[in-house]
Image 1 (tube, rainbow, N blue to C red):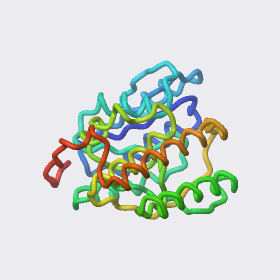
Image 2: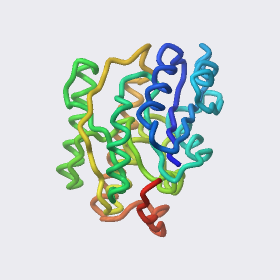
Image 3: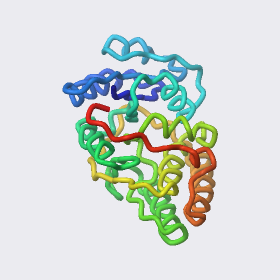
Length: 241
């Protein structure tokens, strides 16, 4: 079973298409689609349910907290994350799954470094953080905080105590599992203009990501993951997830 967790807040214009395309991409797999409706006021949850998703309803706890709540409710041993705004290509999911089944600890969809779908200032900030991780932590990461990735559900749950409740959750996942020493695969993907308005807060979320990067560099330099992962045994790679 593969569990696809889609955190969503006020994404009524895009969510049905995302759910449908995820189902098409995984048509040959045993899977579930879990939309975590985090305080939507526009009917996102109802539309997601009509599109065929299981819906978990929360009250505006934040992107990262929504993902953690979804992972806790997931039935699958493999976990896929994708955003609800239509920016990520659902068709990339099978290749990401194949990479994890082939031995990767995590497979991440790496967006273009510069693209028309993202403001230049935001791209520049991300480039700065990638450079810091490369030069200070010794880890080359084409995309630190991609919202499209596949990993084992047990890995995310084991990290839950150190995963932030907002957007820096994805950066933490990247750096914590890299510090664990197991292979991480980055696969180039397309990235589309979002449907609707972004929830990104330029000042607050940049600060939080910077703090997360600094903490992750410490893990990388120490050559070990956070304590929550030290006793984790990597599950055997299976053919059906």
